[in-house]
Image 1 (cartoon, rainbow, N blue to C red):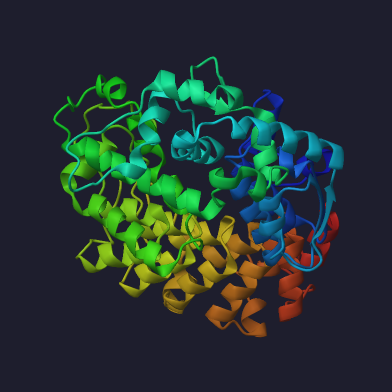
Image 2 (image 1 turned 45 degrees about the vertical axis):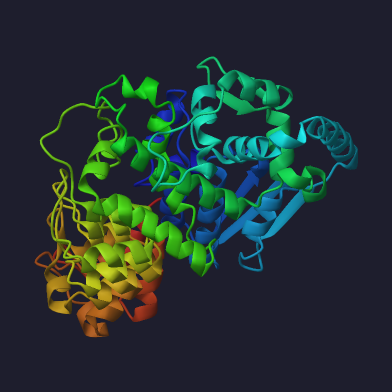
Length: 505
């Protein structure tokens, strides 16, 4: 931290400000800081100790980001990870680059004690309540936010719903459910129900095996699919319910409503590559049913709108954003394609001036970005902050594939004139982008060695801009492309002189 904070462009990071105030930065903020650091240093070593202690709701995102960084920076990023032997961690990281080394701790004594204890407790659940308990364990193991006992009592019976035939939402008796789960759960200060921490860790780590769980076993991919289906089903039921009042009383009447409205999209985003074609078709159709039904979508978003997450439930607003924005947020390519083909206006803007392509790039959804640009989405449209999809891709953690897709659909002439806060885009990338992004730009613009060494009105070349900013990654790229370190600007300052003056080089 002390080294990183002394580097230009990193010291003002909100992550450090949050740490100074005693706050906990998010996973995305930490990884964004890592990417900034990678753009400055030629070699970065990272130690992640106790990865198994990462919060269960944040661990999938953390694992995806680790893999992303390894693939994007194979020659400059070195990671050492220690963890207890967790099946989800092993499965996620086995696809990483070969040089990623992982050390797992294994304690046989802990494993035996936990296995025997939980096998005994599970065996005490009456057979006729196995299905109910299995649904409860599925929810509590992979839930993304707090659940009350009453909300869980509604959630566990959703498997039995028929969207066409059931007129109203049913519920299991909360007190009866709590008696069944008593050995495995605790209640928080906010009245939320949660699995005991040691049980949750045992489930994640594989200490409690498939054989021990027996009829209670459900694989992770199936649970993610189940939770996504339940949330969408629930909001569709709510939208047509005769008990709906359209005010905050509904949050009590429909106990699962706040969770389902907030997390149906995050649960869908967990499904990128985990479902079969048959299940894929089912979840896509269910999602489209919600997106195509204006009344149901309006009523769902009246509780929680991801486009306006700070708004209180049922607060009246003039209008909501078009359905295409919510389709893009799901991360499901087929859903976006279907909505676009239904004459969705992909050039429409949300309240922040963003078009759907801005969101796709922010989420690094490369396939969705490709669908949108193929249907004419602009890669250079500006939102109210002046950001374009291209600038987001160049200066965020977006993959090189996402940037390449945008570049392929951007006219080089338009790209050469594009600016970022008054600075030409290519110069801004030389200042604060990675060498890989700069290399892609140089290639797409077809810049020759002579053009690389042309100066602006002050005589400064791309190498000058990179040197002044201390951007070693961009400097390396420019030198490999043939940039001249001895070209002077109007003040006769050469990139080489500027580089030697910079403390980080």
